Image 1: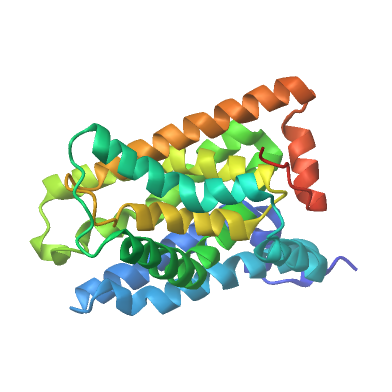
Image 2 (image 1 turned 180 degrees about the vertical axis):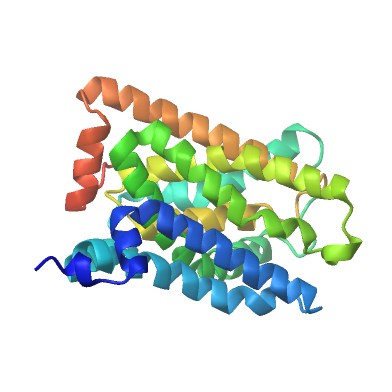
Length: 288
């Protein structure tokens, strides 16, 4: 007997459309919890624990439906994939803060760290990357990189799959526009600016994370910490001109990584299918 025939409508829908189901659930439930907290007069962080659980429960549940325990193990294995080579670790942990500070220097918006560089580096690594990354971004990238984007890249190729993943990735962040001034105190002009920035940054972010995901043999650990590095780099105290230096650094790093990926693909006669096969077997492409 086909077990799907006796399964619930939700299970059948997830089995038939795992990516769309997971993305819809993540965006919808995050909006409900985030906007619900704001409507109740609570800080948005009040909904954070629920949202972090969603980033784990939704992809794990969807993986269980479509592939059972084997698919769940395959998904979660990426969280433990740390042997990716020194080059990739430099990309993950060092590239964005260095490029962000360099952009600030080049544009005259750099200000020396008030507490010195030692404190700045420790704050970036411990609080920005390790604490917030492990507690937040690893769960987030389990959903987006490990489940949604991975399957979209399998189906549509690296470039198209990454751009498709950017759509729900941007949508889930839209409530952030109301965090500073609340639902009633935020002007629609500010909302429009924030949403425009989100939809501009999201494709670049997913292209970078997709490249690193493929290059590291499917390491969710790597892309989760890289995501945390992006967030932490935007909070460096050396940025006197706001957040935009971080966005410029993201674009520069993405262009460099894509260019290196392209050159290596031509040199080694690789294509997206070969890279995805490496992900399936957990083989990292050493970054030299």
